[in-house]
Image 1 (cartoon, rainbow, N blue to C red):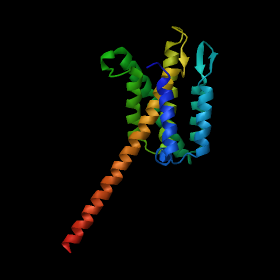
Image 2: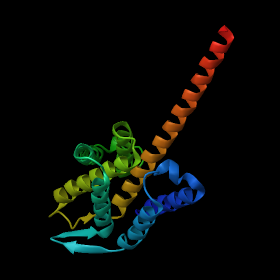
Image 3: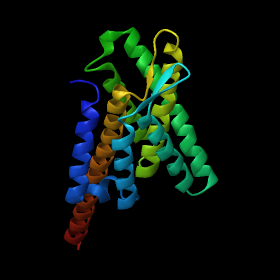
Image 4: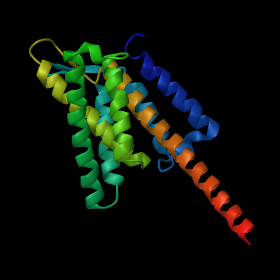
Length: 208
């Protein structure tokens, strides 16, 4: 699969899910207007790349930077804002580290190196944060920072593209996987809690 196709595919799947009523499960705290604005902005920005100081920047990365700033802005309280930023810095370091490890030792690659790293980051984000807006925010900050580290590292060797199709595939996969795993785990937790509650109620009834 060529780079960029996965992002397009996941974007389409996300639109179908939201149109089918899954929006409240995936991103309950984000308004329909905000979601529409993000998708329109992504569709426009991802088509353009501009040169800047020896680096080509895809505007999709710029749009994600705007989205991350908006998420930090709407997060209530200075402590939650700092917590979100700290998680983003942590994920950014892990993003860079995972890419370097997978590039140095291809034996560890199961599928495609960048996508493997994205899935690992999605699991890490799930362990660190489950609130949808904060989870998406810290993942986005992490990806932007990690991609920035990699771009600076390769600068001078070639003309790197910051936020190119591979980056877009990885970001979409990480966010989609993190939100899907979160929804599944929350459903399993709710189902198990209901089952145990019913079981304890029946035992209480039998004792009587």
